[in-house]
Amino acid sequence: MQKKLNERTHDLKVHQTLGLVTVAPMCAAVIVAGGAKSKRNRADPTGPEIGPSSSGVDLHVALGSATVALYGATAYYAIIAPKIPGVKPKGAIRWHRDLVWIHAPGMVLTPILGAMALNQENNGERVHGIASAHSYVAWTTVATYGASIVAVTWPIHLKFWEK
Amino acid sequence: MKLAVAVLLAALPAALQAQSGWVLTQSTLTWHVVHPMHEVAGTSHAAKGKGNCNGGQCDFLIAVPVKSFDSGDSNRDLHTIETVRGAQFPLVVVRVHLAEAALSGATIDADLEVEFAGQTAHYNHVQLKRASHGDEVEITGTVPATCSDFKIDRPSFLTVPIHNEIPVTVDTTWRAQ
Image 1 (cartoon, each protein chain N blue to C red):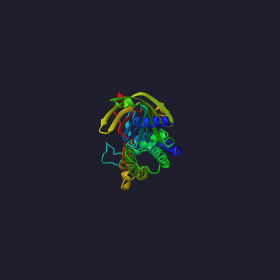
Image 2 (cartoon, each protein chain N blue to C red; image 1 turned 45 degrees about the vertical axis):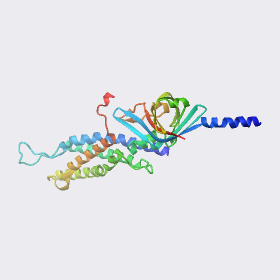
Image 3 (cartoon, rainbow over the protein chains, first blue to last red; image 1 turned 180 degrees about the vertical axis):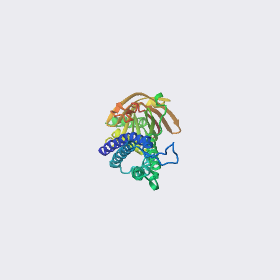
Image 4 (cartoon, rainbow over the protein chains, first blue to last red; image 1 turned 30 degrees about the vertical axis):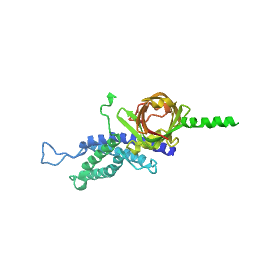
């Protein structure tokens, strides 16, 4: 039993570390997202949209891919962590687990919708259909992922330097 | 021989009178953990205990299962059991030896022996408060436990470990048997 608990703690520590590391490319992907979108020409607002630079798209795709890969590794360690029979999830951990039902599908959908949007842009089309939901799905994923981290960190002593 | 039996019989009531026992009827034990970003407490009401007084000296024994402490978060509680080697050493055992006369004061100066996480620590001159409620006696106090006393590797969050001090507040109610 002690061995099982030790394994569980080890796996969940790796899960925690990878989860926090994932925040970096996730935030960076959101920050550079503007560079991967077609924009309206300010000098000619009625004219055709200007496509994104390939470097802007590449950077966004690279950061998004890194996010998905790290997220997958994070999830892997949570899934393989040994379960302790007879223990019902209680407290903040329940929020942490329940939010998975939102950010996990979001993490799958976001790159798919992004690829669809990029494909439409490359074909000279305006992003339309379900692909236009890429940014909304991404923001929802980021927000629930952040909430998931806060859930297991709460309550936080904001003035921790006073202790 | 007859004389010896007579002496023994005469001494028996006095010996019986000198023996008394106590049983733990209610308990609230709470550990407190402080991290620069968190303050957490875990409580157990599952302690069992008894005390025996004989010849003016009393011995008390209290045992509480490690897994009975509840911090309000099942994940944290499992981490706690793992950290304190609770599967290997499932009980916290506290032994107190004191003079029977000390039990009648408002404060009790007690020397505690605590077995926890496979280690034994001694806490001398722990000040406990005593209050009578009818036929029951309530004993409260704080055991100034630390992680290092029990060779517990301090868990960390964001690479910052919890404070070494893990004081345990004790509120116990005893009934004379």
